[in-house]
Image 1: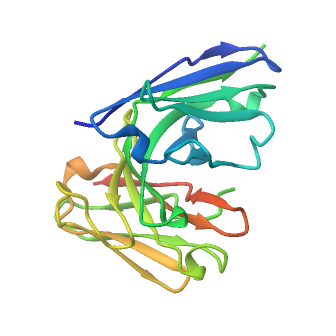
Image 2 (image 1 turned 180 degrees about the vertical axis):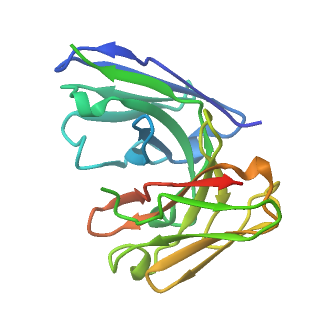
Length: 122
Length: 111
């Protein structure tokens, strides 16, 4: 059974940093791309960042480029999101999701974690 | 503002059929990129409902179906049940943004 368990969320002041983790199990982690998606309370989903199975290819939404860094440790089956220079508009529930698809542009997200809440506030 | 446009809400009585539209542009759905749908029950994480426009993952009832034409896609739900009350999100890829995009979500109310 595929399981994704996020951790690391919390309250941080504007300009601060936070690192999210996503522990994966139930599938061959290194074989699949992984993604972070966020959701502002009561609003829609927003793609944040993705990383290829080997970790060598990364993608970022313009809204987080230069501030967030996605990475993975395939030996620990864990996905990370380092978030720096946090802003109030980064406040959201952050989900990690397993990617699937025949091509990169065709990726969809077949399993999701339960999410971790990040609140940026002074 | 989301790149993909969905109606904020739809509703229907038990047993009825409803459709949810997802309208994009020439840089995403209109460019031929596939559309995927997710169901998000209240207080839970999204769950994959339809992938590659019209395919259902194992375990998803055949009451749910998807289609795509031109720059738009649709999710149809037949035989509405109370348990279908949820938010539904469409997703695709956008070549102008070089990233994956979602609709704002549609809240389905079962009357």
